[in-house]
Image (cartoon, rainbow, N blue to C red; front, side):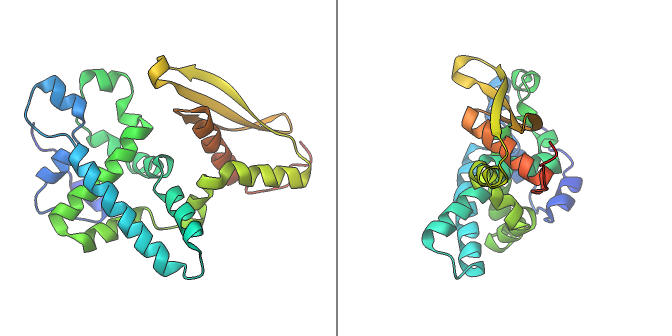
Length: 232
């Protein structure tokens, strides 16, 4: 496996690696090592490390930023920030997927854009930064990519209940419709649309109907910004 040119990626994340082999590992999916029959490690160990570092950094930042919040409120806020959807949206927007080493099978089945994989990449890259540059650089990465616009990102965890309360207060009818179910029984993907007053709003995709509805609700909240829909 030849190392890729990560100069553009390093500019995006704001960190210059001393040893780019860390990034080679951070972007190597297990399917690639299995298919190529090579000894090169996949990103799973880096993801494991990054997951722990992410929880610590986010916990520390939220503890300091919100001294008035209870333990329960901080836990809920952290869960919203480090959830699969939030992290995958960040890496998708920044193009992490294009650096992935994937098997042909994963490539053809959309692995490069899969939400779970994109979430993994946020954490595996964090692990790589920590190993290459230490905790301070890891913290800068999390602050730059995740801990900006916390209010908007934190909406996701309670998106369905927030939208429900809003529509009820306005007398609107809120529902969700499953548009499509894709994949085998053990790995289904659901596409759901949020409907307000019989008008289709935003769609959401997830590995469960609940997750798909949560995504649809979050996207709908950001779209309508709670504008008056009484004319619908």
